[in-house]
Image 1 (cartoon, rainbow, N blue to C red):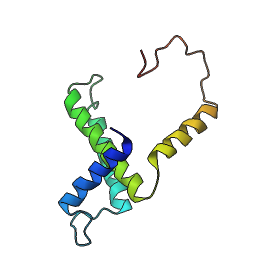
Image 2: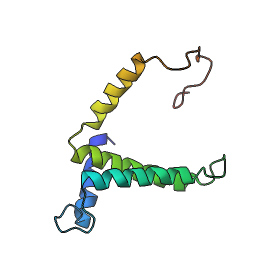
Image 3: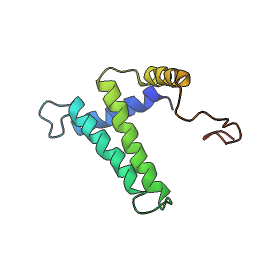
Image 4: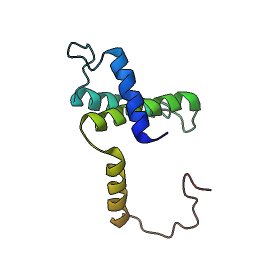
Length: 113
């Protein structure tokens, strides 16, 4: 599924709950979305508090999904093309000089086999 499709599904869900309505008890303002994103990101940390190992992959997946949904919504509501922002940031990061420069070619790249 494409990022734009996920974003539309998220908007459909929020609309179905009435949260975009002016009298909503959960107003979807940029401020509220940013706070919610931060809170959900902190819930990811709870999975590693006082332990080094992941105990429940499904619960972590749910928290990561919450973070992703708020991120998609915050980007969309603020008029930011998230795909373009990520690509631009990757380009900027590729040209950065990092603190530790070493030959990492022997280390596996996450997400690649």
